Every structure is written in structure tokens, then in C-alpha cells.
Amino acid sequence: MTVTSGSPEPVARWLGRISFDEALAIQERVRADVIAGTGPETLLLCEHEPVITLGRSARAENVLAPHEELARRGVAVRPASRGGDVTYHGPGQLVGYPIVRLRRGVVAHVEGMANGLAAVLATFGIAGRWRRDEPGLWIDRGEVNPPAKICAFGVHVRARVSMHGFALNVTTPLDAFRLIVPCGLDGAAVTSIAEEVGNAPSVAELAPIATSALATSLQCAFGSLE
Image 1 (cartoon, rainbow, N blue to C red):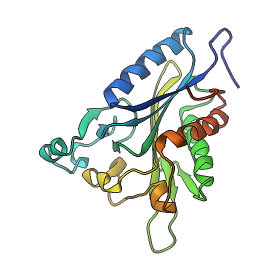
Image 2 (cartoon, helix red, strand yellow):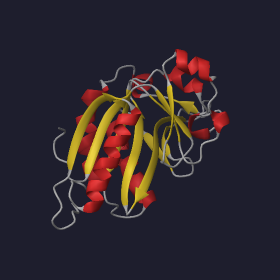
Image 3 (tube, rainbow, N blue to C red):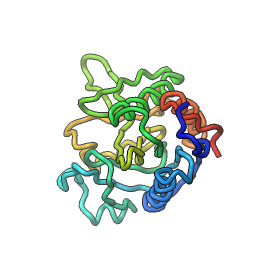
Image 4 (cartoon, helix red, strand yellow):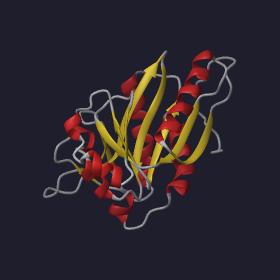
């Protein structure tokens, strides 16, 4: 574990189901405290109300559904300071925001998240493969079917402290991804733990497992999920 001298011990918090706006406000407050040295590095885990987020590289045409349909389905649209294009968050998806000091570079930080979540997937017999060219965890489906993305990543760094993070599809209804071009990758397939193995824990049940795996892969001892 690497902790700046005098800093509080890292913690992990379960926020439950929460809007993107609420979670963003919490992230900003936590990061300000980490930068100031007055608050602990923190892993925030949650499940979002339906929302499409637009990263710094997002193109408007990658939101396929008209505003009227999004409103009818209760799907919000929000800009996000993370990298990447368009993505969807909603019920059945484990969203994680590690607000931590970078031990190495940004790419290594994202790969650290990917390694931890790949270990989580392995407990279900799922082989998640990290792809740096198209950042995410992908599931290979043989020669006939294209790989399917099961986890997306995107971060924002200020003063070498990260926020935003990952979105892992657990029991996410996959038809929600038809509203967008996921991560701007036209024709990309999307999958979930439930889709791959037929049975999956709830997001809340998976959260402490992910906490333990990320504590190892990010070299940050978050402790028990609060």
C-alpha cells in the first residue's frame, strides 16, 4: 500500500442506487479533500439511475435515440469530464469511482482497474481481456461472433488524483445499449455477467468482491465496504 505521509487511511463506500449528478457531486468533494490532504482516498461504488454520459470525445450522433424516447424511458443525458465517448449507466450495472492518487501513469491506473475486475469476472468463469486500443474488458466469443464489451472505463485526473472509473455490466438489460453507439464503437457488441453465465449476483452483492480485488490491483487498501 502506498499512502502519503499523514493522510487518512483509504476507505470504500457503497452509495446504493443514486443519480449520476449526486455521485458526481460526491466525487468532486472527495477529490478536493484528497488533493488537500484532509480526506482519504476513496472507492465509491454505486448503481445509477438510467443515464447516458458524454465523455470528452463524445459525438452527438452517437446518441441514437431521440430526446422524446429518452424522456419516455426516463433516461437522462449528462456531460462528463472523463475521457472517452458515449456510454450508458443504469440498474444492474456496478459503477466504480476510485478517487486515488496515481501510483503510476493514467494508462497504468486504468489497467489496474481492469486487472482487478478481470479477477472478479474470473470467479464466474468469465475470461475478460483488457484492450488498450479500445479501452475496456472484452469477452472473446469464438471465430464467428465478435468480441463483446462487458466493462467500460474512463477517468479524469487533476493534481494526480483520479475520479470517474468503470462500469461493469452485471445484470444490465442489454437493450439499453441500443440507445447509443457504445463508446463510439459502431457495431460493437455488449454483454453482461448474467448474459455470459445465466446467473449473476446483485450489484450490491458484487460490490464487496470488487472492493477487495481493486484494493489489490490499485495498491490501495480500501478496507471493508462501508
